[in-house]
Length: 121
Image 1 (cartoon, rainbow, N blue to C red):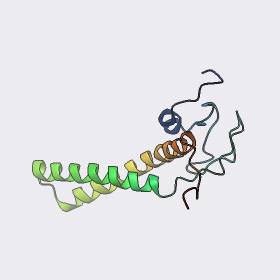
Image 2 (image 1 turned 180 degrees about the horizontal axis):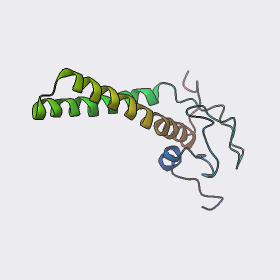
Image 3 (image 1 turned 90 degrees about the vertical axis):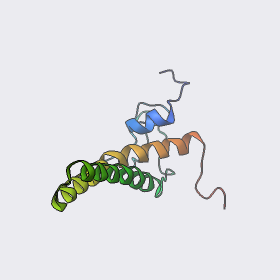
C-alpha cells in the first residue's frame, strides 16, 4: 500500500489495523485501544465507539439465535435444555466473535469521516 493511500475503513476495522496507514495495530488486548499506532503514530485516544458495537452485536446475534431456535423447534422439537445449550453457546460465541471487529470498524469509520466527540453539541 502506498504511503498516500489509506485503507478502507471496513477492511482496516475488521483486521484491527490502523485506519490511517493499515500497518499498525489498533488494539492492545481484546477491546482496549492502543495509545497510538506503532507504525505511523496516529493518536487513538480520541477514538470512542461508545455503545455502537454492543448494539450491532445484540441485533445480529439476536436475529441469528432466534432464527436458529425457531428452525430447531420446528424441525426437531428438542427438549428445552437443548435450546438453552444451543442458544446460550451461540449467543456467547457469536458475541465474542463479533464485538472486536465491529468496534474496529466503527472506530475506523470515525477516523475516515473525521468525527469528533462533542462536535455537534
